[in-house]
Length: 228
Ligand code: ARG
Image (cartoon, rainbow, N blue to C red):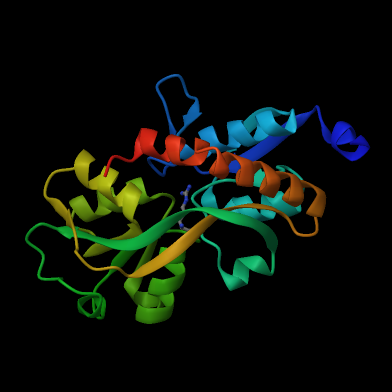
């Protein structure tokens, strides 16, 4: 149709924070790679656009959408009611579980055990939001990434890290002496986000995602990175 033709061409600028394996990391050639990059590429292909990936702080992503510095966010971003006031989310394409990382010899075994402890989180994430709400500011230390938070845990500066399950697994694998508790802090939906009111792009991305789900592409991309 006419509308589709006029929407084609150009660049889809995707914002992300590439500290979040296997959704997004930076490879040895300084390219952002992972599930979100692959999904965004597949979506951009459907839209007839070039994909450009912009790597930034996680808590800059929503402001960057608002300022038109990027067109879309794919960052393992959880759909929350607060964020829905600021951006428009697409249909969900994956789920995440807020998980708790502790030293192997830690006495912390449940969510309740975090009560009087110091917990590390990535600034602005749902882990940050939940822990700050549940434990209070004084029990939360914010870091620029889960990687840095996990380093602080290894160094004994904090008692636990609360972060999404898939990056948690990667961080625990990359370090000695850590484990993930067998308890779920929260189960969440990941979705892409566009600027509030950008219904044209929202509809295009939702149609693309629907097709990519239906033909198995999304499952295939996820299975390339997550082996259950
Ligand atoms: N799912 C969590 C959230 O939306 C954490 C996402 C962090 N993503 C990242 N690319 N660092 O708050």
